[in-house]
Length: 396
Image (tube, rainbow, N blue to C red):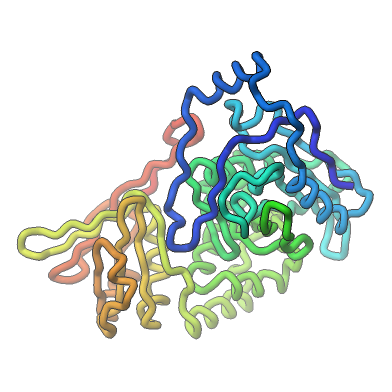
């Protein structure tokens, strides 16, 4: 049976906001550094509201888990110091369930904390908090042992990104980890993408709708192929050999299977790419006095750009490069700039030959790459940092 909320936990004062697709770059306001001392002082002087908050959001998640797992008692990992009181972990808890079925043995991790677990605080009546909770399915060869704890760190790291930036994840979104999903391991799983968890689906709670988003571990080339095509097609292809979409640290890429690789290639050629935007804070477009334009890109996005761009512009679809401050639209010369161009701070139009040149010649290596007499792409190295701010990798 799903764990009930520990009565010793206070609710978070964090405000939630769920952003539409056009506002994914929006950010939540950062909490004041004075917040934690003030809350502690309020607790000491009993100025804090001691009324027990509603647990409607928490209970709705537990009820959904009970409908799947019945009386199974999960391993539950709670947060010692709440995020709102200065703790580092935004999620208030993660439950882990054991599974043994025809697809193998696996642990099912489920978060508590992306949605509003207690009273309704956000102004959006449709969605609860950020509108989702995360799940993760880890393949194991020993279901009777304690669940590995490294997935807890992965899920909490993703939560820090969401809580600090305000950006949300949705089905079909993908992300690189810039290293192995389990730090220090030789696994090829170095990224992931999101699907609706087919065991838990979505629920309506008193605080709004909550979707259960399953994080599926992927290899680097799998993420690239997903972006080149679309998440739905890639998911269907992966399910042919991995029906539960388990994350198996020992597996190879599905692109190593000639049959599956051909399916992905055929799908991308026939349907193009559904990836319409790359987000990064290090893209800028400069125009010289004589009209020559230079597009500055971090090396980390070059492979994505080369994979996605042909599948967008060859199908007369726009493509966007988005930063916190700007939106650059990239359109085919075969079309007049669409309505979306009015929302862009700058636009670039490319011919089929220029699209091919970008895909074939631009590399994730420092340097300048002439595309046409009026356009050059300059690639800059990208430093990757750990949580302590140390540089652990330089790309390009």
